[in-house]
Image (tube, rainbow, N blue to C red; front, side):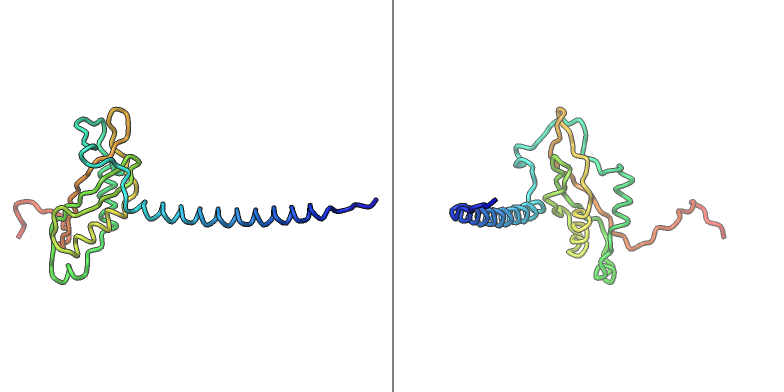
Length: 169
C-alpha cells in the first residue's frame, strides 16, 4: 500500500505547530505577568472599601487571632526580637500599631499610631506583618474589614516572680 502525502498538509501541520508554540509562549508570559502583579498587590493593597464606607456600627464578632488572645501573646513573645540599638540605648515602651483585617483575614495597612523609637516601631511593624491570617470580623452574617489597634510592649526588665508585700530577712 502506498501512501501519498499531500504537500499542502505538511505546510498546514507546520503552521499549526508554529501557532501552538506562539500560543504557549504568550500564555506563559501572561501567566508570569499576572502572578507577579498579584504578588505585588497582595502585600500593598487591602481588599477593603474606603474607610468612610467601611464603618460598621454593629458587628456580630470582632476579628480574632487564630487560637485566641493567649495564642497571640505566645506569637508575639516568640517572634519579637528586641533591636540591639534599642537595648544599648535602654529604650523601652509601648508601641501602638494599627492595621486592617480584611474580609479574608489578611493584615494590611499596617502603621504605627503611637511611636517610641524608630527601631522599636520597625520591629513592631515587622512582627505584625509576620502574623498569620486572622479570623475576620462579621456583621449581618458577612465577613467585613475592620481596623484593629494593638499595643506591643518592649521591656528590658526580665520578668521575675512577684513577691508578697512583706519580705523575709
